[in-house]
Image 1 (cartoon, helix red, strand yellow):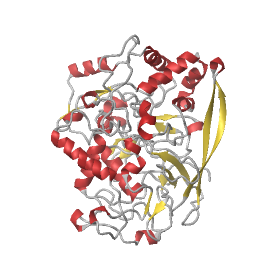
Image 2 (image 1 turned 180 degrees about the horizontal axis):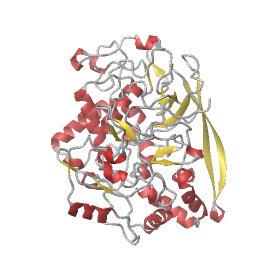
Image 3 (image 1 turned 30 degrees about the vertical axis):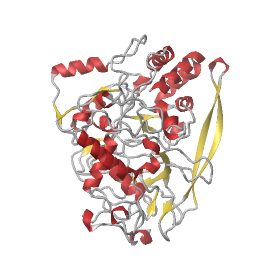
Image 4 (image 1 turned 180 degrees about the vertical axis):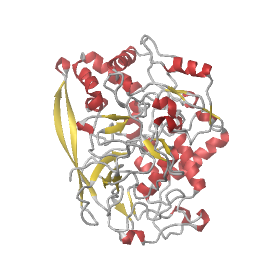
Length: 507
């Protein structure tokens, strides 16, 4: 079956009624932010303006995570370091959160009550299983390869979206399989499916006599364990994104992101970034979506909570079902023994532990830039900026001034993302909506750390499904709003194309 996309944990979300969400009404409910003065606003506008001088690095460019930046390591632990500006007590909490992030969950019943509750259907036994060394996941390399961090989201067209959110494209979970397909199971339960991928090589001629080949994937959900999918089922392949800098992205004021949105392309530049609006898992209030490949979650806490429930099958205070993503049609799963622990208020992971994992996820440090003064890197930066890549990959933000999170407060950061949804064309489409995102839209991924992918994970695969085997392939898959920029890369002199990739490798 050809595949598309689904609404994250649609079977588990509860949407509360409220007024129709307008962009101007979106609030940073997750932040205890202090208002900016007019002087600060003016200063921020100056420091975040794109550079036009490519003869030398910009001031503070070496520290993409601001004061939280750590020295760039040369091994696989480069993405696993605590932010440099954490206090001693915070570093202790970081270590505790790391232990929970790495923890292998087991099926219930077990003698280790604090560790049981896995599944019964699941994609991974730990958070670290998908986020390889806190970096990105990768697709299977052969039909027998289970050591991946890829799965298929699933949904069917729905009738109504959540109250209070405009332009929500209604979808619902598959009535049998839920919101995502799980390829592992505990005990006597059957896994939901087996992921099958085939690739077609598409040759591409570049300027200067150079050539490239794009790997076009086709996906199929094979060995379905609970009968057929819904006839209108839409599936989307996903690999886990990297974890660095999430707390800093969370601390960017909503207003600063919305200022970059241009849904009707009013300025005529061909770029139509749109904001994702999602309901808060805690209150149901509309918030700006920031996390997930289609910006389906507003906060790091929500993203973490959803992953525990959907990926591992672990109940928690916000998503308390002990069976995770299982549906009533999977009665054996829903009726199985679950791991709710009275010592954890009946959940398989409680508030305190969730807070620690969230803190860990918020404070994985961004490594320092490398080779900033290299002439090839500076030349590539010029190509990146002048080609128009920064129309979506916004270089800089200043985070909010926060009363209770000094580690994320008022930092100049360089994520190279506008956090908005963009139409990336038919080549990258999953043909299915998720929230406000259409079947051709994806959130602009942050680029910080992208040049360390091979070092950290042992694989050099990119994009939402890992199809690109190099940074150049990832660029050449860009379509839709980015099609003119892709064509410029195809047509530019080979030395400029090489410099562009060298710049990306330095991030």
